[in-house]
Length: 303
Image 1 (spheres, rainbow, N blue to C red):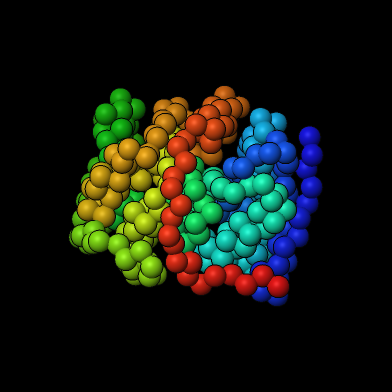
Image 2: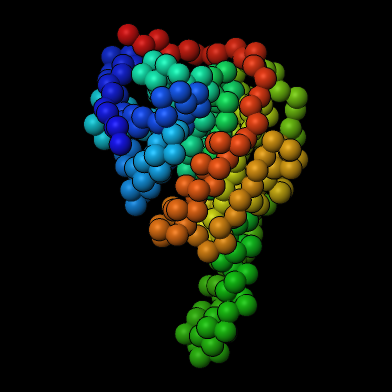
């Protein structure tokens, strides 16, 4: 298996990535984008194993570290400041593997947030694989807690046993529940408006900006959700209740997969392998989209 390191610039900093060569004539490659403060191997070596699985099947892959992470230079930044790093990686991917004409972004958690807020700016990005999207707001988290943790707790024999034995403070539990309910109702969501394809995303809460990016990106999307994950539960609740998200998951271009027992990072081999298999099948079979006319905003200048 041919794997090699690449160093590419963004501003005055140098980023490090690993290219996994696929088939010589491959035209579609996968760019793995990390979520949260971690480097390119990823949680449970998932990114490394996924890259090798795809490359062995002929799909070229690039993994890389953001500025300030792992072996890359620069100041650390959160996911909202990583969009230009992603676009610089797309440039490098195509330069290093010239046969690749289409790039699929694969991201977990807040890497999904980056992908949705960035992909529409770059016409070479022609597909998205999104796992357990991060749409975290205080209100959204409270709603997810109410529907998962608190509901399960009220139905739990253990909860009522502790309550009857006096090992729980019912007043404190009720206050906690009411406080969570107030947070869940804390914000009225804005209505979705028609997107302006050549302008920056509108300002607003993270879920609404992500929805705006989803609407502007016109390529196919593979959505993979875990069943045992509060982040995925919050996303489901947001997609079902927020006006900005209405209808997006039902679009014909969206393929949705669920792993009911899996946790946030698909930590077991069976879950990880299932994700890799779904990804490979989708990369091979998802329909190509017609060339998009996209205005690239804040284009990165690589020295």
